[in-house]
Length: 639
Ligand code: M6R
Image (cartoon, helix red, strand yellow):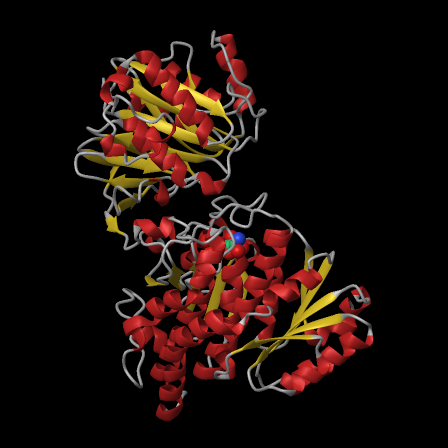
């Protein structure tokens, strides 16, 4: 997936942009480029391949221009641009610039197709993520007007279009160009005529501002500038943003100026590093104890009460009187909602529906005042989840958001927000954000139970105590408990199909385990309610099929054991995830993965962790890029 970074301020832009692109490498790319404004003209360097190719090209260019050699005599050639950016003096200082990593969609992997793109006068440069759907019509028109295209991309039309309108300044030109574009994209433009100015526009693809002292950043993801600033502003959909060293102005596409808060994120720049782990996903799996501990934090400080803090318009009265809860979410977040349903029904005795947001938004749902809709989204930007929430809100329901990203779109479209505190998650496969979402659902369920008086105080206190033990149990399990997993992965890595089954609270875990394996290993998986086996899926089984059974404690464990027998009778091999102390499982399963014992309601949060690792090891054995699986994006801003 492509990455964007832009800088405007007093410092040398090239090294900052290059460092930003390095932080976006995890997204995958096949070419890259940087344009900076230097002595009244824009200097652009692009290269096919990884960033070392771009670095070599940049160094050759700077060398040819005679500036850098003088500024840094005797330097080693390779690391110059990767070093701390401030240390690199450039002569002359180019302090407005844009950079891009490209993942080819329209047009081959060539230097000409790499970004930045520019117009025929070379006075307007742009970087673009996403797709311009009407580029053919626009290109024909621009060609007829004399534009000469140098690439095969859809993105290049934006450079020509902005240049075409660039008579009253870049801001006006971007606004006019934006009005003609269709599709989903984010772009940043710069003009040789206006040093110290970048203009960005966002339609459905992410674009974020990093605020510095007398300098500003713009990027498609926060890691690009996290070393420099933790003060961020989110650009809304259909908005244009104007960056100058001392100010950032947000505008609607029509030019109306918008107020936008600056949010201070508490992520450490080191969280954007692998810190000795082979991949971000593996690091994030091992951060799960901390993520859950942070998420629970002071919310469970009292022995017999949950404090969810200020949920704005979602007050205690609403929580006490809401007639039902409807959860809307996608992918892994949907699975967190499914787990939440069991805990809310069990503890608070409230009716709960959980829906896939992309389905919900196109139904004609029966929803209205008195209903509480919970939208779960790690990124806070998922188009379908936002649309489902808007539908519900427009019909009078109250909407509570659960997200990991402060200030994200979901927080601006909700009546209240509950944050997970998982820290930055870079791996496309959600892991630590998932367990944090589950932890929030437990807290919400306990708060509802408390307010509605459905758990007697002793039970409430016991459940809170057990929730607070979860981080410790996760840490123990990750440190000592899962040694046999890589052998199990080795034994089954060659399988072409995995079936996951579970019942009751084990079912969402089966769904999530199956999703993890398919998304990072590309192995076909299916996940089913174990009780449904004889209604169809059992026909899939033969002695080559590994069946992962979630068999942690639950009120239906005996039934799950019967399902295991059914499966084994067909010759399939059973890998069971079971709670410590359940010895009977070992008699039925071929392999058993143990997770710590806890209240059965909380077992899903633990049981999912070995399944994340199983998926990880299998994908790793197959040599897959687990952090950036093919065809997937971390944030899905299009439907
Ligand atoms: O940002 P969100 O939580 O709204 O994202 C929802 C899904 O796109 C996401 O969970 C996706 O399924 C992940 N790749 C799962 O690992």
